[in-house]
Image (cartoon, rainbow, N blue to C red; front, side):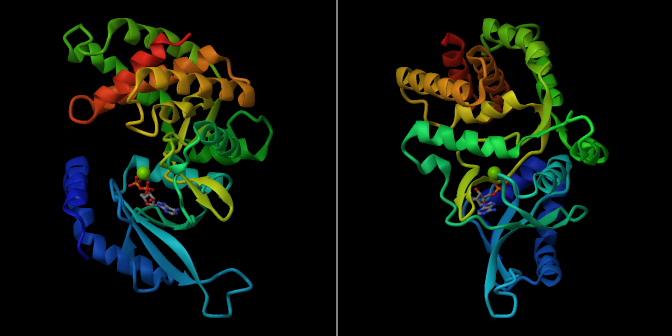
Length: 320
Ligand SMILES: Nc1ncnc2c1ncn2[C@@H]1O[C@H](COP(=O)(O)OP(=O)(O)O)[C@@H](O)[C@H]1O
Ligand SMILES: [Mg+2]
């Protein structure tokens, strides 16, 4: 199979020897998945590969009305380098169980491979023009997705407990911000000090909210149209306050900040919709947007497009 050179480079850079090992074993892993899960021969990589091998595949239909005929189900095969994020993705898919999200069909955690319901037609939310409509759809999906942890006495909380350690803790991500000052020898480099201080001082209050199992990378390119309505793909499986979920959403569609005034108007509309639909205080929504924008800029600093998130942060910080 010919893999795009960009994908090979990304995997090698991100995962080093483990990445090279996964790439070398990929034909074997695809063959094993195909045999075990009954996939037809034509396994076709998606055109936008990034950190995992993701491919379109088919297998004999398992739906009762089609099971006896020659009908095929279209599915997605995903294979990645086994590591914490991939494990938490699989675990989250199990717990979300198809509600608001594509369904996990098969899974081998040890080998880092799994099979997903293919969302069709699979139009991305970013392709819709009307931003209000996009935000309303995003809220519909979020509400189906979140799993509160402290529903005392309900089976979910008990069910979640043994798997708890497999999920990503949002507080671990935000602990990363503590590296900024040492990195800049006590200063804050290109990160405006007042913005960083504002984020640092808001975090204890933001984290005091109830913690849930959330998606963790919830944005317009991860929300796709399907026969079951709009559903999300690629959950990170994060434990933290639901408010964080709007962080990635507020920065996206990535690159849409071209005109500062227009971005401000769009952000205010989004904050209003979240207030109307979820009852969230506007101030809290803005603080989460700001906190994530700074975190995203730090993650991307200095190699990726950290400037984009930081510019969004500056605009969020000017909102009342
Ligand atoms: N369940 C699915 N249905 C349809 N397309 C999918 C599905 N899962 C992934 N894709 C396609 O594959 C691309 C990469 O998948 P994704 O899960 O985001 O991989 P990664 O973890 O590497 O970012 C997506 O942008 C989408 O185009
Ligand atoms: Mg993705």
